[in-house]
Image (cartoon, rainbow, N blue to C red; front, side):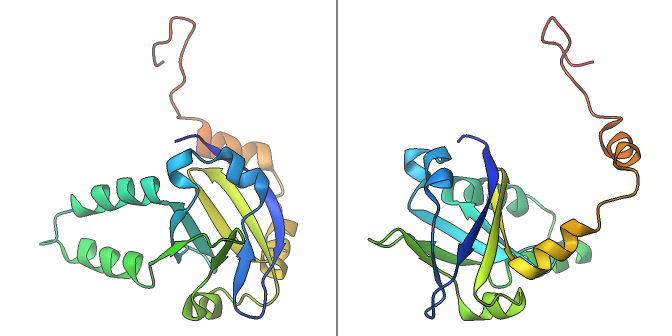
Length: 158
């Protein structure tokens, strides 16, 4: 699967459907263009997973020790609301009403694609969140990425 990238503003119709932008569809592998899972995000948003990514995440979660209470709680909350959806003949995806209510989505959404997932935000919520950029983005980048491993010239992790 390829890595997704981009920010797309899209309208939701009265039946809770939206057109998957061509820019996203082009980035998806052939096997991932039609079947998805949509779920609650970690913030007040939804996350759209191509089928292959959802299967990988599910496999990882299924390896958790379910004798651990925190793991069971995580599994319940993570899978709550997860719904399989497929693209229709008009290139649209239908979002479940319960998830639309959860994310406070009305008519306009922002699809924020990164890595192997697409976050779905109510446009006003997304704009509000992004307008509060950290005072010192360089410090945040150092804190988050300062310990990440990178490949040197020989292709080895350093």
